[in-house]
Image 1 (cartoon, rainbow, N blue to C red):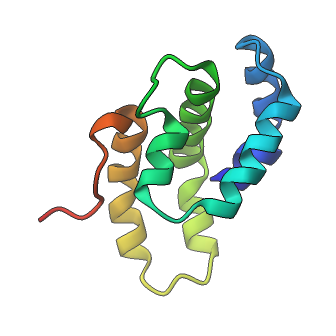
Image 2 (cartoon, rainbow, N blue to C red):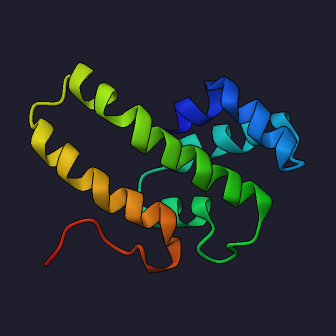
Amino acid sequence: MLNFIETDPSTKILAEQMNISYPEIQMRVRKLKKKMGSIQTLRKMWGSENLENNMKKCFRILSFRFMREHCLDYIFSSKVKDVGVHVKYRRKIMEGIQNPVNFTFIKEF
C-alpha cells in the first residue's frame, strides 16, 4: 500500500488538489515504511486522532484506491500461500480506512 502511495501518479495530482506538497508525502511514506507493522500504525496513518488533517485524508483516499483497484492483483501475483485469508481480510481493512477510529482488529472473535 505504501509503495503504491509513493509511486502512483495519482498521488501527485491528489496532493496538488489538497494543497499538500508531494515531497512531504514521499518523506512521510518513507518514514512510515520503516515503522509499519501494526494496526496502531495504520490507524495513525489514516488519522484516528485527527480525521480532518489533509495529509491523513490523502492517505485514506489513496489507501482505499489501492485496496479497491490494485490489492487483488497484488495478492494473486504474490508468493502468498493462503490467498483466501488475504482476500477475506481486505474488506476489514477497507472498513478500517473508512473509519480508522474504530479499527482495532482484523479478525472477528
